[in-house]
Image (cartoon, rainbow, N blue to C red; front, side, top):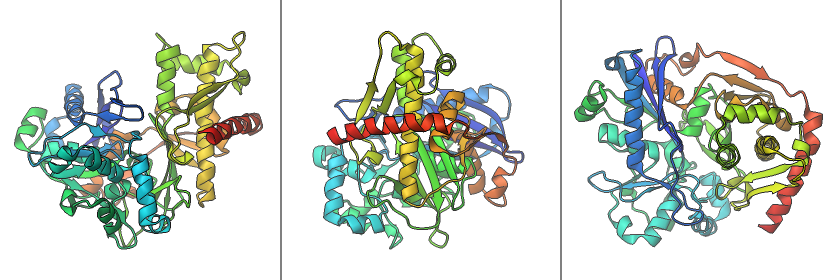
Length: 494
C-alpha cells in the first residue's frame, strides 16, 4: 500500500508518497515554488485564503504523480498535517465565509486575556492547560464580536487541516488534539470546555464531529478522485497540527522525548504523561497525536514566531540574488558572536513565550565600518538560536529537561552554522533525521489505516543522519547572556 501525506504549511503545500512496507518516500512535491504570501489588512493581522491551500494541494499532488515513480491508484490512505491554531469558518454549503485567521495573527490577544480572567486563571490552566490567548477560540470570538453577519452564517468551524480534509471527502471532522490546540478542550472532564463555550456563548453545533487522530475522517469523493487521479473512496485516516506531526515524524511519542523544528516559526515540543501547564502560560500544552483518556500523552509546545520568517526576510532584503546556501556559507566565515552585532528576532506577531508582547525585530551595535551582509546573516541565525535557548529555559522551569533533541534536517537545520549555534546555545545535542511534515503525515495515515502493527513499527526503518554535539559552549554563553540582557530591556519597554 502507498500512503499520501499532505503538509499544509504557511509558505507552501508539500506532499509525499510513502511505501508503507518499506517506509521509503517514493516522491515529494510542493507548490508554490515561491513562498505563499500572508495577508495583513491591519497591523498584527495575518490571513490566508483556505481555497488557496486547496488549489496548491491539488497542484502538489499532481506534481508528485508526474514523477512517474508510483501508480497513483495504489495510494490507499491519506494523512494531513497543517499549520496550527488557525480558524476557518464555512457555511452549510461548505464554502469559506472569510479568509482564515492564521496562527501568527495577534488580533484576539486581548479577547483571550479577558476570557482568562473571567473564567479564572487557575481554572483555565488546570482544565485547559493554557490561557485562551489568541488561539482559535479567541479568534472565533473576534469574528462574533466584529463580523456578526459572518458569524451568523457559520455552520462549522475548523482548523486548516480539517478544511482540506473536507474538500477531499465532503465531511467535516476534528479531534481532541485539534480542539485542545484551539483551546476548546477540558482535560479534567475530558470533553468540550463548558467554560469556553459558555463564556463566549458559542453553540456546540459549530464544533465538527470528534474522531480520534488515527481514524477514518471520511473518504475521497468520486469527482475529487477523478480530478487527482486517485481511487475514489480511499480514506483520510490522520489529521494533525504541524508540530505534533513533526514530533510523530521523528518518532517522538513517549514521555521525555523532545523534537524541534525551525521553519517559518520555531518550536521545541516535548512529550509528557502528566497534565502539565506553565503558571505564566508562556508554554502551551496540547493533546499529542497518541493522546487518549486512558493513556495521557501531552505535548508541551514552546513556539517562537520569528525564526525562519526572519531568515526569509534577511534573504529578501539583504540577500537579493543569492541562495540560502550562499547566505549560510557567507555567515560561516564570520566568527562566533558576529563581531558584536546582535539581532532580536521577534518580528512576526505577539510572542506567547514573551507574555504575548509584540517586541519586534531589533538590530544592535551595527558598525558601519565593520559589519557586512555576512555579519547580518550570522547574527540573525545566532539570534534565532538564542531565542530557542530562552524558550528552552522556560521549558526547563516546567520540568522538561531534554538530554537530546531530535530534528529533521530541513529549513534552518540545513544550516550547519545554525545547528552549531543551537546546540551550543542550548547545551543539548541534536539528532538529525531525513524527515519532514508530509512524510510524517503519510506515516500517520498508515497508522490510522492499520498498515502498521504499532506506532513503533511505522518508524522501524527511520535512520539517524548524524548527531551534533555542543563543542563551543564557552564561546556562545557570554554572547547569549549579552543577547538576553538586550531582550529583557525590550521586554521592559514593551
